[in-house]
Length: 156
Image (cartoon, rainbow, N blue to C red; front, side, top):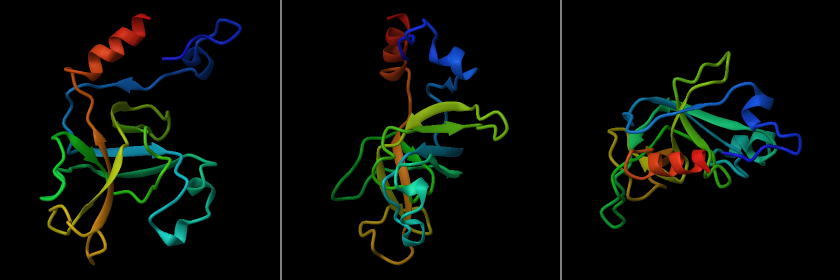
């Protein structure tokens, strides 16, 4: 949703294609999260261009829904895959069906926050506990809020 450039060319025309967008799709499916994080939760990746905001980074895996913890419950619909991307990746897309050759898939949500799950899939109250895996979660695009907003922006 960008205005045309100074020559009147739309971003999609310059790039050649655009990602599809999906509303009310299942959340607990294989997905890819993309972003430009400034850091990583994995010390071995610190300083790499993908984790200093210089290059696109990604995480892949089956997304899980994050309900929050007993102390800090979250609204339903926060999904995301296992991921070590840190701050700076927020706002990036979560894509399903990403074709590695064309780079095209369906954007179904965005990156918002980290979440931690134990080996059984339960949220970890203490992320520093051994056996807790980090996920990058965010809201799933739905027809109640995201779709009307998208349609309005498209018509603007």
